[in-house]
Image (cartoon, rainbow, N blue to C red; front, side):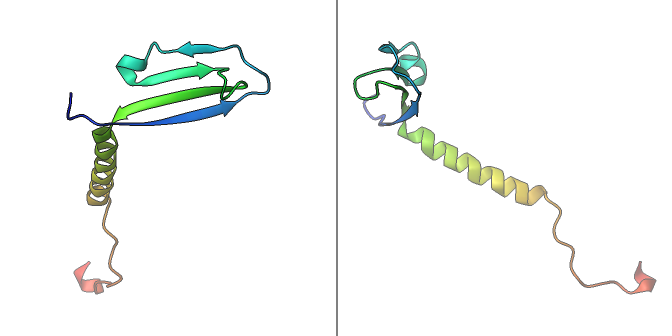
Length: 89
């Protein structure tokens, strides 16, 4: 675990009214997600704090690249504009 590096981000979703203070850390260990409601920094917002291993982001990019490559291999190739003579059809 010492070699694992973590990255994090947080998202803020504003509401129209002030919310009661609440922290939900039920998913902190399993998914790296903490939900904060009505804290001092964002009293009328829901804040989602996410933490994930740095390799997860790299794997996601690699998966997207692999998916695009496979799509190109499966898609029918573009037909050439060369038209065969009648006697060949």
